[in-house]
Length: 358
Image 1 (cartoon, rainbow, N blue to C red):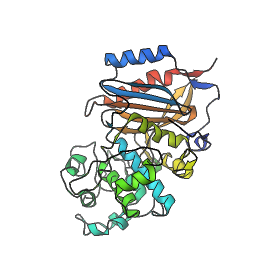
Image 2: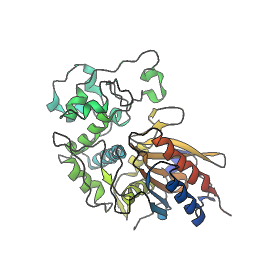
Image 3: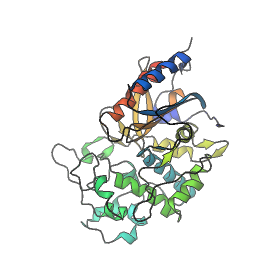
Image 4: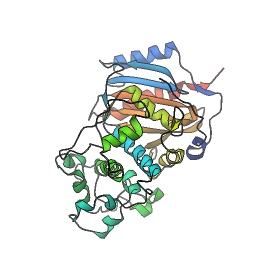
């Protein structure tokens, strides 16, 4: 894999303090042996691959449970973050002005909306990319009108989103003005689906063709296909199947400030903006533009981490302070503890092995 390496000059600005130069991931055959043994024992559920890029080069690559380098992993909601990349490309191309644009501009054909409310006219691209729109949509609440399981059985997913009622805030759920960043996070696949629709509509191009031209082909990711909805639209919010190497390249693109083999695929400014915290999820996790944001500690110093996450425990993780990309694919769909097991693998074999070089 040929990777153009660029020093991430912006990482210290949007993530925090730069790491000490002598802190690096220590990797050895013994560590690799222990990781393989733990995975084969089932300590981290059903892992199908682990890849580590250190300073752009593969430090570790292994496949498990019947997978190999050619396996296309259904990483589910990892796909959502790719939509953020495509919005960045659309802004760079001038097809989208900025993230403050109202989304109704791109869906005038969906009017009139059910549950009419003038506030629907003010929902922005940033609102749906930060999972903080004012509509009642919560995949983590099975009673929510906007729960994704209700959306999947509807042919027109854009119409499904705009027809949702406005969200209420009971006493145990603080409204946006009482939350950090002025936003109330609510995980909403229906809104993320619209992010992809907007990228394609803005370019007047089928989303799959647009993504291939604007992102996948420049990264040399070939034969990428998306599932389709009942209406024939791309399933932008989940289900894109990618190899482990493809996922790693997407992460390296961000560590390279959007540059790949000498070409600027995404603006460096967009990389910076998309990884800024925009909504708080809990005490350990925040959210950017369809990116999950957290921190890890090495030698009592806190460092930022950003990741793409999907059902089953799938993750593509970037650690800017240590110039690392980590891909973990799994097949534990809808399984209790799937994400916790992935986090444990990351903590046990990545974080614990970052130390000061001799």
